[in-house]
Length: 356
Image (cartoon, rainbow, N blue to C red):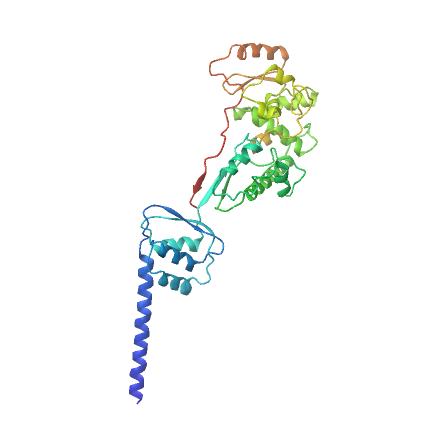
């Protein structure tokens, strides 16, 4: 009797071992199979999606076989693993085990938005609206309503978003990206303000930001930022008109068609620094750290004027007489490729994605 029980127990153990071996083999074979897709594709994993549901979906689409064994593998081996939402890049012939590895590590596809120095808020909104991977929530809102949504209802949006490249995953909202850029600008501005030079003619950080935006729009050669800042700071300190074309252009808004006339320079707008003393009421563009630094660390010197050479650089003069000579040389004898302002800024970023 004991012998029979022993044999039965051995048989049962052998059957269990064989069953376990069969399960392990089936799971291994299912994991090692290549994905049957003809081209690279992105698998969109939304909040609430489960590995089981995704594997069944891929099996229905014919991309793999044996989703039962794969689901069993996840349940036995990875039951505590969080499935991150986002997009996963699947390659033709990729082993299913590699795809599950991407899920384990949360290696979702990263997209990017580049905010360019010198852009205005309208250009930033256009760039955001053109990104299909971003959830659009502000298209029907005014600029003021957007700022209210960000928690800053009384803040003018111009110049308040830091130019940089921001990575994100599919499904991020436009407001989330704006909040990141807004917070980054506040952080950089505060850092630079704490290290500012002495004797600057600014009452607060915001005035420094306004000046930085003018420097950003006037600078075609990065090495000239400090010298351009020096000219504007000295003019401001002496009560001279800033007389800078980019502020006039900003004040013209949609009426600007690529050139300004004498009438434009005389036309009253809050941003016309040919007719209004001091700084304009708001920044006129998005500014990078270098322009902020220049506004807060202007170069020493005596120059009060500058004129464009036509290649993006400038001639700086200490006196009006010297300035007029430079104007006659570089403005009245213009080259065919003359350019009085920095090179054109990109109008919108090229959507990009990178694998982490």
